[in-house]
Length: 405
Image (cartoon, rainbow, N blue to C red; front, side, top):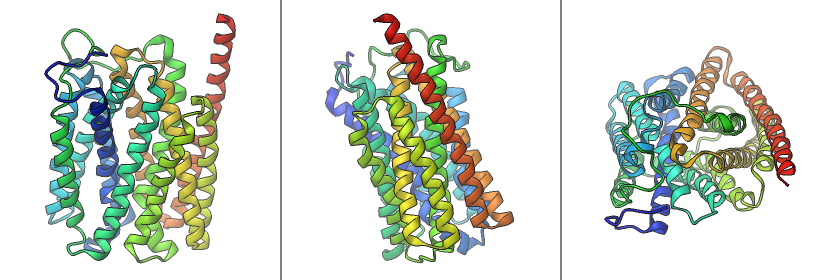
């Protein structure tokens, strides 16, 4: 891949700046997670409203991906990421100064715009700025960058909420400073790369190349299962720890959620040596185990079981996401990589929003513990589907290799 001669950053630096943009998507997404219980107490919100705050974000992401999913293939990864980072900055600022719930919802909309515009181009850029033949490393670092963003959201947010002044404000001011720094670094990325499509961009439906549709289905279900898993942890994790487990310390609750991210990041190291389909198989199994443990922790009010559930969920998330992302990245045509990854994220974010909102509505109507049970069933079903599709994809790829040999 050739980079623009006017770029200040070389390939290696561009790779890590793109990783920082990836990290921002999860930090921005998860930053409000630790403040949901505070909003609930301050404004008298139900679980339906708190999960709606979470769910409006992936819904906006989906709308952006439908309308602009392949725009980075034409205008460039850098320009699209800058637009996304700018929208994220506005969203975080609105959270920092929000006087009521309406401002929070508007801020969440801008966060959705930001992540919708930057998620797929940053993931595609990491593949394109990686060394030749290192796309699997790019997928692993993408997963680790997401986990780092989530860890920062949980630990920084938990510490500031528990021990610093302005518990519903300071967290977002710190994040605003970080995003401003990442925006500045993104400015110096190459303006264009050789992986871009020719011609002018125009709004059109995302099309999956015919030859990779079965691979796309397998990869998308795996990433969707991982995002649905993350939806329950991020939208209700702090509420579960506070209401069902009985932990009132925001840093402890944040650390438990951060464990999810830490395990996800740690698992990316051995996952790099796994075939994509094998990673999905192991990740799907871990996801089912995590949901069983989460339901058990809610019914038994047991912090240790909740911690075990968070760890298993981190493992499941990491392997499902990296396995699915690597499977698609390795097979998608380079000139349509941004659009194809956008289609994957579209399905994943849409399902994430539906699962979060559905679990919140059920929790409001029938109790938080029952809502967790239903969420566990939904995510377990998605994880099993990911495993079955991965088995089929693995058999098909083996058959193709045998015929070629």
